[in-house]
Length: 249
Image (cartoon, rainbow, N blue to C red):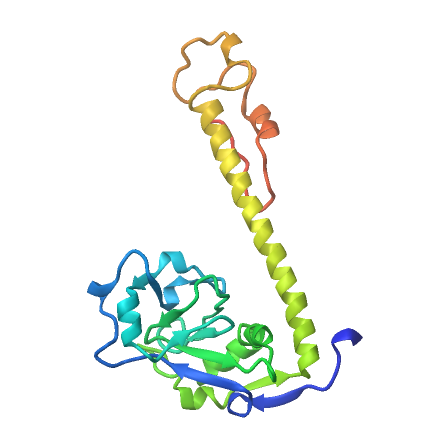
């Protein structure tokens, strides 16, 4: 713990090196009819899943439309934060997989000056339970919750020295990368399990299938000598992630 120790300051956002950028709400605002399958991402809160932007599931606008709108442009290292709607407080880090993007009316952009405030550290502060609780206490409106920028500026953050910020963000991002890699492995295992199940127990192309006695197997029955317990031993499983697959008898 001493490696990340040091003095921490409690400061409101308005006193930190953070630029708050709102989106465009003029007549230029993109209409649904202007969305297209690819182009410049047009970000909305529905594509924030577990504090990550799933941009491929969102909307896109043309480069020409993007050039018309000067406000609300996102760049690498920015944080997008939902300030309107049921997802108030949802946030994600724009990692630069796309060169830029545009925010919709639900978002604001937090752009930290990296000479004074580490952007990734700021992101981890924003998504922390403590800060999320503060956001909810400032949100108003029941039908359409929102937090005005003027109120958002007053929310406090705990900020250590810059070198400490960088150490903390490096450690947390390494854990995030590890979690993401493990999730990819789990998905691969799940697909292997599904494929193996289909191959063995739908198409009956299990090892030694050409030697079984059953011949034409009736529905919902398994080949002789290959029952539920045997199937469970053969199929990959992962506690809490990939359910054990049983063969219906």
